[in-house]
Image (cartoon, rainbow, N blue to C red; front, side, top):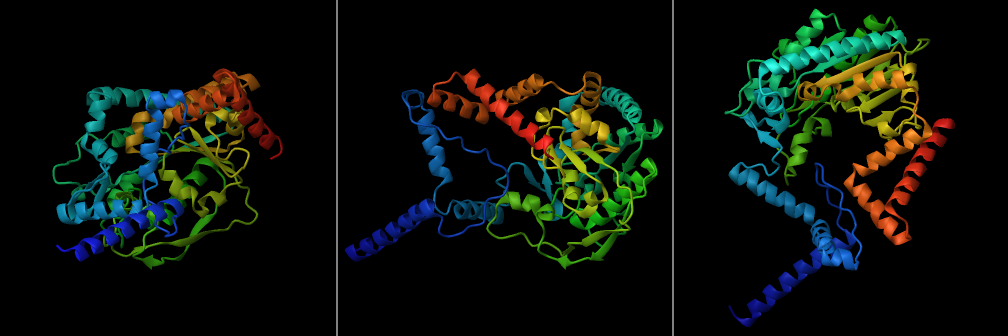
Length: 442
């Protein structure tokens, strides 16, 4: 290789490195953000302590990685090569099954019985726990009825339960299904519920489109109108309220999937999308809404309700509150929306105000049964509204259990010459007063 070739090579490499540097500083070229979840990088300030314990150097290293120019392209390109050439998915939570079907590892572990053995050790222990939880549900229903509130449990099936034939070759559904066992117990004890598991299994070969897309993990978006209408009809029979109907306006057939239908493929962060069959992206609305007395809805649920929460389904209610995993609050009322449940010092008022409490869970979430909601209800009605000091202490405890937040509190305390305890208290009081003010002026 002569000098001219060396010069050309040097110029090309220099231009490439310069382009990466400029992109990292300016992000002039817009790139599609990476899918999935990442821990937010907590900024570390330079000090003698952070320098000598190495935390500042670790921060700089991670910061450089996350702000490298064209980082998204490089990651997607690597993932594409691994998938196309070697059939390997770099996201360990996503597993490829038969016929290019994608599964979330958590759902496979539940379907094959691994989760059951890890949690309970045996089927008998799982059954005993289910009996205990059903008794707790009956006590919950009795408590809610004393306050004029009805209860409904919605069983949401997983893709593994509906399409077991598409699971990976060496994965097989266990004979005992914890979800089916709960459904049987609910039937025996006459607990109001909807069994979408049996319904989906019965209709999967008769419907024109898949109930789950190959690249999704939640039920397909096209099922939403039918799921929503089925729940409204069941709530009607349970509560006595006359609730609106769902009207399908347009199937809107498309090969461009929404995030709901392509979430696992999005989390693979490939350079090119995996070919997918056309699926409906339905447009639907409520009918018969005029002049109806709309109830208040409180939902305790996992991510399966999130798909409903984004539709007109919630418009069937006067106001609604969605306690995500019984932790985070999403609500039609601004004074509650976005808060952690520990900060809602008037949770008893929400429970008292609700006409309907609806639990929506899929099989893996049955192992954390309603995330302590039955016990929380008993505690709220027995104890009454939290005092201001109790609410502030709850926020302090939440900050303690959030490492990134607590680290920020520590750094700020050091910068402002306060003790960590003083700064914790100051932040907790600010959060409490902000919520109190918004609640007062709702």
